[in-house]
Image (cartoon, rainbow, N blue to C red; front, side, top):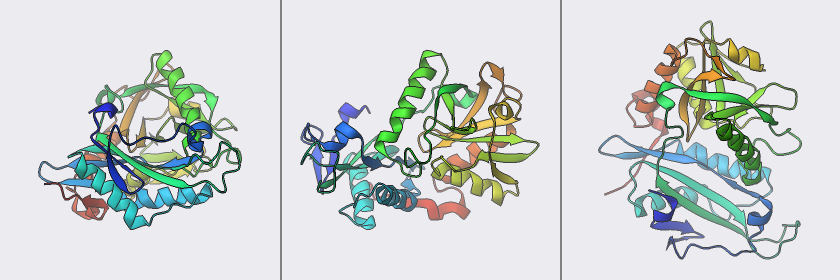
Length: 306
């Protein structure tokens, strides 16, 4: 399903048709980027559908709004219901869902204290982040630097922050690779354009510190899987050359899920194929999101789709 084929969009408390769900041309967020959003997925086990880690996603939406000094005019439960209603209204079994909080069209001033706050929820059929993901993707190190912690609020999933990702991803595609690693202002590995980073070296799982990274929910999920399996997990500063010589490298995100990286800057990673530990995480994750791992079903929110 393309965006154009969406039937219903939740906008300010109502489910509206795709054609009727419109915003004003003077919408402040459209011009300046001050808004927050979430990326959420639902999965089907063939019989039932589940939203993965819905409570945590909604909490992060509210946390992002707090960081950006925006008050969401709905409760957590109301936002959860809006998300569920949108999926059901579009009869989606496996979906990508994007709730977004944005500022109204009262003015195009940079002073947004008096602007109304709006909420929309869009849902469409889930898609593959990378067409060749199962075999491993190719990445470069970007010429763009990730945001400094005191330039943009890096713990918020904020609209305007993603211009940095869009520029970096365009650079990646033009270079013929799938994605890029962005370094922080000190030259250490931060994130991919829309995903967190992991590497495996001598049986230890490493991931960059969160100084200027979003604490991704898929990142948290993989770390929990690793700890439960008795694998040592270390958060630390990582240099680009450490990625080159790692045994395995992969990236994680709600859209990306778990994607193995087979090449970085024209250098083969490990054996040049999906690593053993990476594949184990992929297998467990695909079971987990469909409520097939009993120890983790607390993260599966069952949908009432007829």
